[in-house]
Length: 149
Ligand code: ADP
Image (cartoon, rainbow, N blue to C red; front, side, top):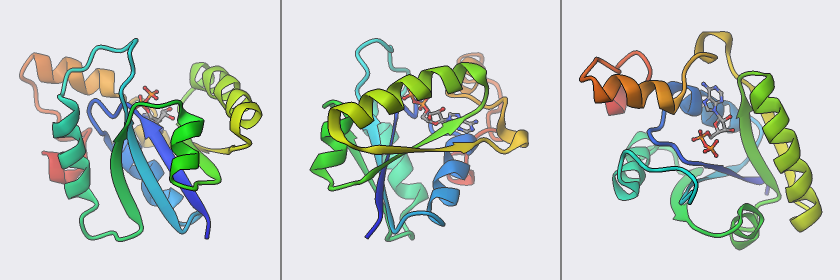
């Protein structure tokens, strides 16, 4: 059984995240989406709202579980007996960050990170962009999964 965690803030969950999860299903038997409490990031959407929203998106996909966590990512992976961490990459900046995290998580907990490149049409999509639009009452439907529109 190949199990991966997909950790992130998902504040909010975007089409970019959605695409990484769907493609991850071709690689893993199960994916645990973990909404982390990140002390350095201020939250816009309450974490419980994010949890319910993402659970709704994947309600018909038994291979996906959505949970919250507030531990170290490797401890979260061990708790769910996941051998892999799934993450997405949009640009060089993401790459530098992900490489450091991947090395740390390998060393700390022997958990392997699998990185998927964003699809070009989603490369510009970020939670920050959606939050900005949302704060100005703009339509965000082009950037989030159907269920969140
Ligand atoms: P974090 O705060 O841990 O970076 P995010 O919710 O911002 O969490 O992102 C979770 C993961 O999804 C990260 O690996 C990030 O690079 C990836 N990601 C975010 N947006 C996109 C996108 N548009 N395409 C592909 N991957 C993305």
